[in-house]
Length: 309
Image 1 (cartoon, rainbow, N blue to C red):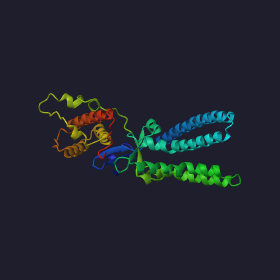
Image 2: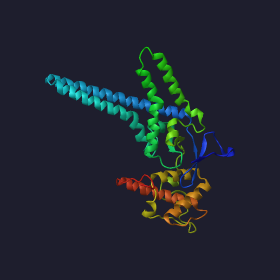
Image 3: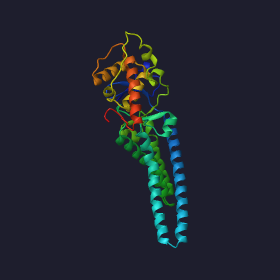
Image 4: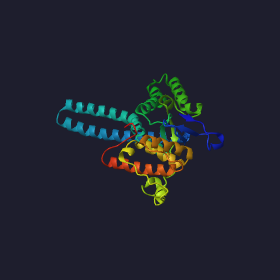
């Protein structure tokens, strides 16, 4: 769920407030049209390069194999091998065009290489975690938005080439201009999937957030008036990578209201009492220990994507 930011606090027309399922308000900035177009261009260029390399490789294997079969007088075997390689080529082209986007957007970063270079990522509009259904839906719609007009134009005969070109151009423009017709710059795939594309925060984490035992929490560890929080593995295993990223953003933004809500949510979840006035220290300690716990589990081959895993 998202809400508009009051005009007095708005830095850009693209600023929004995203409300997570836990009721935490997170300020975000929608990706610009230029950033989205640039990311798509870079991704398509990379996909095209991979397709060309794969095609050349399979063609080299095919010609080399055919020569061996024909030299041995086995034409049936040669054509059978050629058909097998052709099937492999079709599968590879399909995977590059579709699985490429699915693989990267379903990852913890929610972004393809092109989106990462452009500093943007895909997010769920309800504030939850991106699901496989969302990513599949938004990427299948890309075929209708982009690839089908091209196929339609390529398959048109010479007699109807003019009409086909106009129809394909109109088809493409309707979907290409779709983000201009809604305030959240959503393409058709985003509307169907319940997703949007947002800017990825560029600021580096504070030292206290990246290294356990440092920063504000450690600085105050020697002060008897400030408790040193130590969480058990059971308390840390309540959350996963998605919640760690959410907590990271809350600490970056450093908004007192958000930190109070997050501290209350975490404390209630793990059976502890919230401590008013020490929200940031509590969250820094929990962030550092949760991150260390997740990294340790990953080194053992275990991965916890979110609290539902």
